[in-house]
Image (tube, rainbow, N blue to C red):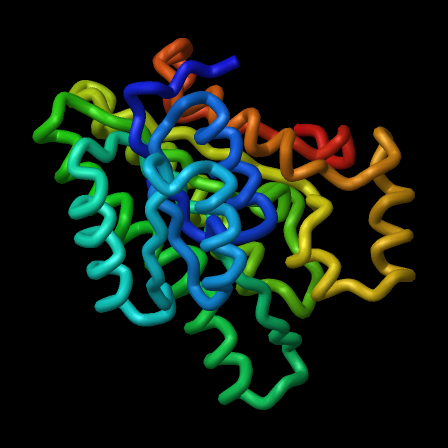
Length: 252
């Protein structure tokens, strides 16, 4: 198990699903958590109580607003000045098939790219500048298998955003390793979260599950365990790597 007693970790989208699992794993390993949430304050406060108020701080921000992204980073540093790990987990789906009106198409692309790519990129920039001053740090970006296999026709913005996030991670790893800034990417397949259940009907969920050789969607706890491992200092030379976790549903 990872030992994160000297780590402070900002987790975006941390109130539920994969983000909550990552926050729990970091907390269980002894780390300090800065838990970002967008709208689910009650869920964030419940998780804060579970991890412990002395080791879990909650910060609200709307990642669709660039000014809110800047405020999130500032508030995270205010509550955890020694912050040394950023986990960009927050992301959204927004349907945008090619047959929708052009205004709807552009609105979906703009919103998805802002939340799934621009906000993480802005936070990565802030983290790099901060990490330089404290001797290094880590960035973990949560992408998707969609970055490699493509997405459904109505979720092209989501797939594109996740593909770009993988490239961003590789670039950070190459360019800033010498300054102690390490970067990793986690690319889950379908995970058993509210995000999936909110966007797929039962028939679609059954079809997805039947396509996974292990027979079930990825438990968020497994992604949390992987993220906590990457927060530790055990495997520095894995910087730049992308970790597929999809039950063998997509292999590359």
